Length: 115
Image 1 (cartoon, rainbow, N blue to C red):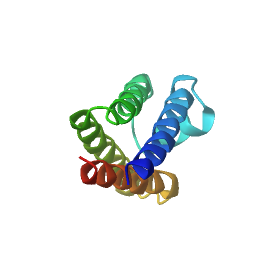
Image 2 (cartoon, rainbow, N blue to C red):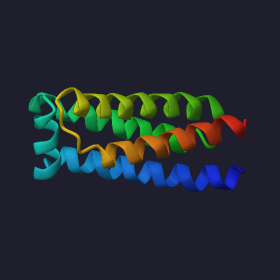
Image 3 (tube, rainbow, N blue to C red):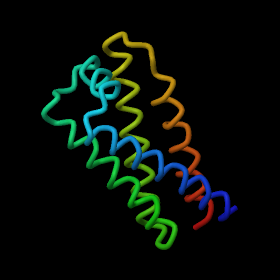
Image 4 (cartoon, helix red, strand yellow):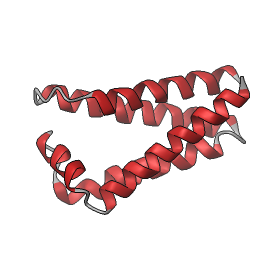
């Protein structure tokens, strides 16, 4: 089961890093979506920082489980709030955020089971 944790953790960390890169490079699609849900443009770098911290925590958590659990909880909350922000603005395009939320839940559950 630890192999599955490693594989899914690596996929999640890569997705988080890729998403953070898009935010830091001001990808027009990501920026438009973020603005559509009402998040201020000047603070987009904070979202990217949270994603990079989550990615680092997921990877480091493979070696020390408390970091992995904390990072897993953090990214689950991050994407749960992202989905909630979309729904609050009646912007129902939540497939990407919802899919990553499910992946975060899977990684958190696997990490908790492999302590």
